[in-house]
Length: 397
Image 1: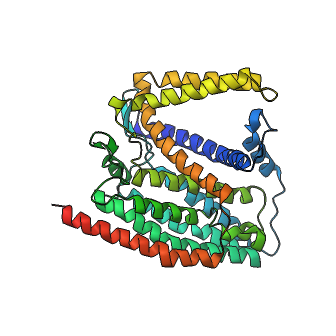
Image 2: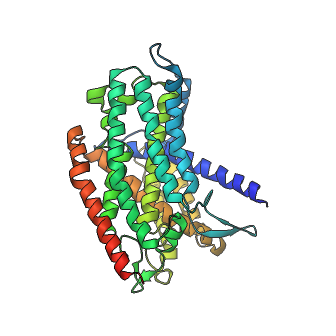
């Protein structure tokens, strides 16, 4: 199997998984927020609303695609394309696991391994604001323009603390390669505590991780940092004049950016695909136990249905979970799937944090957010970087 064919297969798998994740991330968000607010959430399209993302795509594809007469047409059409392109392209350099052997071919679980992957993602994040700013300006709408200006100022303000937080693990590892950063976090202190950056000396990066997370919320324009599209002030902000798939492109870019920053937080601070505890203590059996438990719960509720069709859909889901649990017991397959499981589990926890905060926190005033960036977050990130740099210089031989 030559390199070109293998690259096409990997690109197809990553594209399929990414698009599916983006589609169902919104469904999960709506379900979780509904439960927070004591509602049911989407459940009319398919069992438990599982086909709602498909219905949303069909709706957006078939809606009338309007181009207002007062817009700058070229830049108006270019803006959503730029937003989604820069959001998706960062996934190409993110590693999902170590080296694996597939049909006699050794390959990395990654589309491309750049030795400056961190800089590449930072660059894509930096130019991603152009899509939002261009949408605000080209719409010739005062609300859109205000949203674009807010987004530009907010991203510039919070990119500095984010970059300073990222620099700390880079200093500790002395590399810009995401793969090397994850490899440096392998192993355990005292045989139990993982050597992740948040626990690793000479200066554990728990503070850097918190700074990165806060800045990530601002970079992705999520609550409480969603002032660029504040509907109570700006109608819909920078995408007020957009409809159909152009409107959907901005939402796709938002969720793609959420996935990217969650992957970055996992790779830089949480050990990537490294397990939570050693294999000799049973870490390799965690996926099997988790899926088996989920399957048992689904079957139990299927035998005691609360809604129509639950007696069919829930047992079917339970059997599927039990099948996945058995797959993790196959040594050859587990070697490939275990790193993916730990990586996906950590990314999933961070994505849930995005959803949870959206369902619980209010939107702050714009001046409060900007003051917080420059008077609190930036100084904290700078102090954390200086302490890390000093201790690395002192302890390095």
